[in-house]
Image (cartoon, rainbow, N blue to C red; front, top):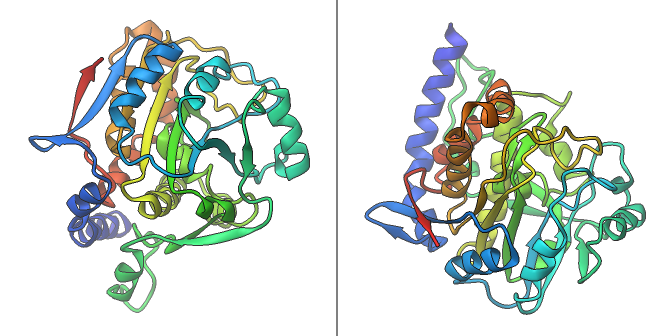
Length: 336
């Protein structure tokens, strides 16, 4: 009982401290808003033409050298997006290339050399691919976390058993991330065995974290699951969002919506119909809209993916992004 009350107290406190910068974060990212709602653009046209229409609505601020963050998946992953859906957009983004990081779990993607083999096997070698942690890590500060720690008063002289907002104050990313001026977060939206779902937040929260450094920070000691893991992932993603500011944007492709991530080489066959493509300059709004689109499907279509999201507490990703002022969960879905 006391632990739950303490958790609610700290959530309220962190919301007051960090929520004060929420609108500042939105302004910094220039997330397009109308009457307090973020704009999320949507099309049912899952094609190169549909992608380009969505991108044209959200590419303000994507300048200079552009990193396109993908999840390139395990070898021959059964639910990967068709290559043309990526190649057809990348070719229209000047001075761009794909970026990835190595992984922590046992996989050929754990080492740079064999990771490159997987990238070639899966067909992603049509443009430059930068494995960002091939030559080491860089630490990104997570804005607002240090201030929270400095103002934290221990409960009865002890660290609270669960303190929202203070798992991480910085995150180790692949150091080559710092070589880019802008980031296009291009995400295959699907389920995830630990996170419930993998959207834009997961793509950068896990995907930009270095294989041995950052991913260990997120998983923590003993590979915790549940809320702690989700919050570490969100905090990590905030580091990347903070770093790029106005020069980051997001696309989620809701196709091949398996309950499993592309990190599972034997992912389950999708039982949810393909839905479409969404794009936004607001990371919370785009992941919230993607979840809402899934939950709006007929019961037979949504059952498996909704069960995966709910059984893993995946909606806490959205709650915690809001707590940390990362975006707006109030949005307009604009069909293009």
